[in-house]
Amino acid sequence: MSKPAYTAGLNIAMKIPKADYEATVAFYRDTLGFDVKEDDVSYAPTVSRTHAVSFGPNTLWLDCVDNYASPDLWLQLHTDDLDAATGQLADIGVHPCDEVEPFDSTETRTHWIKNPAGIVHLLAETH
Image (cartoon, rainbow, N blue to C red):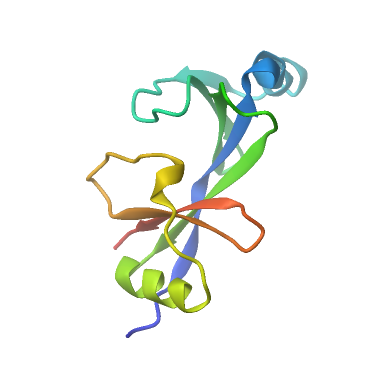
């Protein structure tokens, strides 16, 4: 098995409880003055609203999740070989957890994984 290469993705998702959502969006837009735009969420069945924040070279997604009690942070990783990466990660006990958010896109091969601290990462194959 070849050793896969990993790189950081440009997307960071902050999963925010509904009760805190409007104030969080206002914080980035009104208090900090970031460019904040509401976006379509039809692709994410667990998210009721989302706003994209230009966050330096990254996009910070503010995702409203109606059934969350506390916020969560999700990160994006890329690999050149998803099969090798999945195998390597399984060797250390990190297995896909695609049930956290169904992902219907067939444009790229992906898996959701969690790091040892429980932080969700989207692991996407890129060439």
